[in-house]
Image (tube, rainbow, N blue to C red):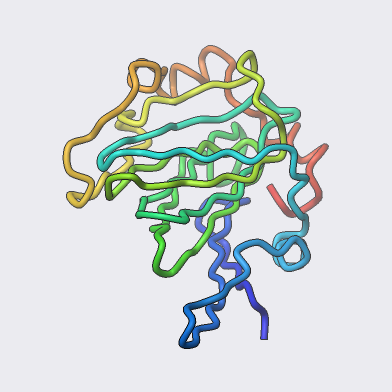
Length: 203
């Protein structure tokens, strides 16, 4: 029996990861990341370069964020404390799922994770105060190649649940361009170029 199970999402290159919990009188144990199982299911593992943690109030929206490709930035996201709705957004021009989104609840009960391939946009909304989100990423932070799409873009149409309460967003994220504006500016990743440097079948 696999200790971590992967399910592909409706956005190509994005996966939901469900760990198996082993519970006893002391508490529980689980494996929230297994490079070999990710490699088997997704056709590639994560080349780890940096690990990040954010702490957010209820209602905080972070994203939609993405990085220039190449190299882009693959992400493996989980929630040690609290709960979020995590969103994968296909920003890759030429992708068969361009503009599509997938949403997964990540929390400290089921302790699921999400893997997002390079070129995908990432956002989340916190559903509780002091929500902790931890990310494993494939490249170090480089502000000159980081970009954003407005989380309020009606074309992408992210749905924030009532559980999130009043939405809180940074000025930078609020003022980010729409998907159409970013495409016009030439900011979006190219699906064909991604296929040249990411393992086949994983974008």
